Image (cartoon, rainbow, N blue to C red; front, top):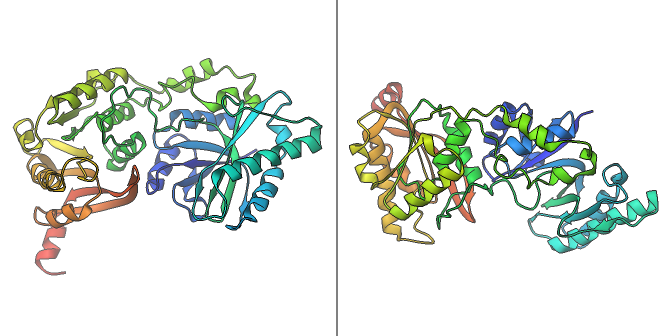
Length: 405
């Protein structure tokens, strides 16, 4: 029996998530209902959803979808939500002894709030089970056996069982040092995926901060599951449907695809000794310190480390100049990035950059014969940003420009 599943992710990287899910054996399609941040697919057994949630580096959550429908934005929308939730046969998923809670993510304008959705949905579950089985299902808001999600985006509602838990998958358990402007680990992993990088190619992050991008690249190269460092922290472990499952054994099997012997060509640098020390600490916690070189270095000095044409990929999260630092310094960092990239990148090299100011780069890149091959509109925290994949122009592109075609 095929089970519909929903994966949530950062807005704008849905197509990258589809690529990763396919590598994990799940055929997926982006933007359920045409909505950003939702990727849907099918699994043959619920345990496969647990495996994918454990392994995927580009998702936030995985939900086993039990119902979906349209809801009104007015107060009457709560009646719609009640009916959708109550339509589910909850006795299939909740034993009489199991506790549950409802969590929700609401996006858009509605005449009701998230607590209203959670309260209404919880009552619908209780009422349905009372009618079917005659017992009042117990609620546990702190440590439930089953975490239900009722997510409402605009006029769409999806009801499902959350397989991840309170902390979404961007919470990487290896992070001991938090950079004040750290990139979300899901976005960092997506940037590496978007680059098409291979471990034998030289990857450089010349403004690495706490090292998230380089560490995610090392873990991707070694095929380490995203859940490797948070094995105890998954909602699927307590689901009644898996009461007879040995997750220690299952996770051991899911880990067998990892190859800790892979030696990737990774380099991270930053002008701050404090940040480099923090990045080294994070790399040690992630068990990838042996395959990453760190150095305190100003980006302008990168050509002193790497000869011309020796770098295949630069993946970087430069300063935005919004919450810290100055706009002028952030703009200069963007200028230096393109200048240095021109000096060290190979002819087929790429830059993958996330920025709040794509216009700063778009002014510079044509001058040095670069072009934007791909762009993804995302949110960096709560700031709109773009991930740009920048490549050198091919000789044919340069020729067409010279001849005006």
